[in-house]
Image 1 (spheres, rainbow, N blue to C red):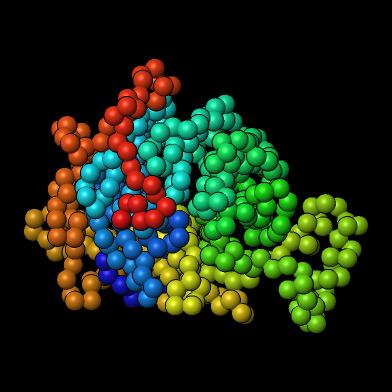
Image 2 (cartoon, one colour; image 1 turned 120 degrees about the vertical axis):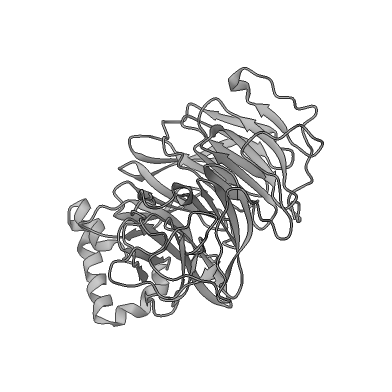
Length: 459
């Protein structure tokens, strides 16, 4: 991986040449470098990327550096999740979209695999639970032994696999759409295995949702993308309401809380990432001394006399800080973390470029970009392999370059034989399991037992 200079502001897309705004690759670029998935782990200390021929894991250090720690040749990885900074990863390939593999990437072993009746649309992890989301059902696994604890059936059609799992072990809530027509959310307690509250979040169907680190706040956006709301996951109370825009309907790609739950970021298919400040009315009091604060307070006083839609526009808060993207329309996933006592926003684009911004938590405004990384560092000249030329020179600091190879699996100083083809049976390979919904029993007697997860289980 190499650090990048600033991308040009004249509309250049950055990343891989020929990339379109949705991450697709033109004919002049190898399809094997198309990014299929990008996910940050639960505490924004790691990033996972799946492509046509490989998947890779990266660490995020305290000095804002992003370094590759693992690269594996594996076809069409469309879902990959890492459990915090442990060695456990869960992945799904488009080659076998109904099969989930749980692996220990440092040892290069497959812990276990599960086959489902339908396509796996999403996988979520925390220290206690593993969630598998299908279109009309959700499976809840115990992280200790990977056994199925509960199945939520008759879920309203959820073709995008939209769901969110709290990373907090004490408030291990799962949220998923309670309707395919409106923006209702069903909250489910994965510890007691009982349904919780139903939240009427939006009038339109849901497009994105995310829990904060405590698991008590749930941010949501509808498919209109104009309003972002924050709800209590405990009692469903609407805590905050923010307006991203008035006239422009947008597709919200990603929502992310800061570790202290004071800020919420939202990325979309527009050129702006909005960062909202979750401030109580008492915390906003000094603002009323200004002209804008006085004007806003007067509008709030008369808002209840106006039509509902008008009053909502007047009373909803606007963004506290923002980022102007140089590649508008590019699909992104975002995360926030405090590094060196400063709040940082990480923006990973499906063009293979990750940008890091510093958020001014006092004054807000436009965020300062402090670094930029290319997840693909490939040689412009190679006699043995096809190469990809990016829009800019992106060599590493020592002048060396790197190219991903579908035939080489790099894991520090060793090669790990994790391939997309089924390996021969061996003592280190995990068991294959098929859910009862497929009318094939699960061999639980010989199921591999895993150590208790809370304390460095998969390190």
